[in-house]
Length: 258
Ligand code: 5GP
Image 1 (cartoon, protein in one colour):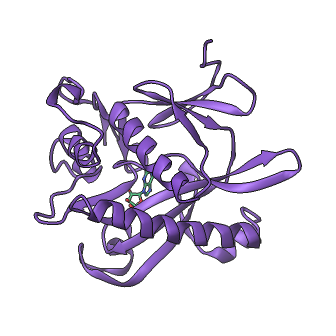
Image 2: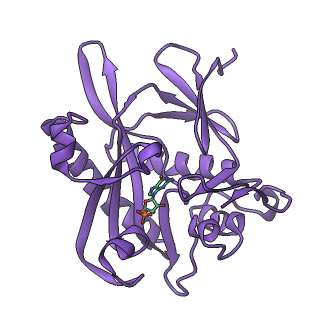
């Protein structure tokens, strides 16, 4: 049976296709890397394969602890089958340590401890550059209702606790990450489930011993080889065992850099 149908949407790092039945979609992980709202863009061979595998493992583990997710199964090296959801237009960002956006916003130093874990929301809109918003905006504009927002906060804290431990166990500090949620309809029932992906594209991951960055900051800030860094994460998670499994690749091809 052919699992992939018509192309529905092409995003910066993933393409969505119709799935084998009306309630499912096929997500294809591309090798495209973008940063600064797509002002910087390159093709990095092997990135899609690594993110597909890493995200599969994380969504599977989160499912095992009772977090509802859209993930059904991985289909092949670049594709996974997921339940169709209505994406809630929010980027939910969790920060354990100061880095990136919060340093710029509040003048903090990268690596500084935060007083406690902070959840931020951005409104998903490329044209506006995904602006930082408050829960007041979310409720006032109806992007999520109060019950959905409560569910989002409690699931997000559980996800953070679980992932912090998962990564700590393999010598990695989870500095921050971004997740997205969607509404999954089942007859008259609707529930909020974790959607999109969790991968080194959407997390900041630092080696505990050396502080080496094992995430997309390698691309954003030209710090090092992105596939080497993501392969290291995959190896520590037990996904890649031998060198042959690391995707063979040519040099990154810069598509656009302004
Ligand atoms: P910051 O706001 O510091 O740029 O990002 C905080 C965290 O969320 C980082 O781990 C970053 O990778 C992730 N993040 C923020 N915005 C996006 C986005 O548009 N796409 C992806 N993949 N990750 C994001």
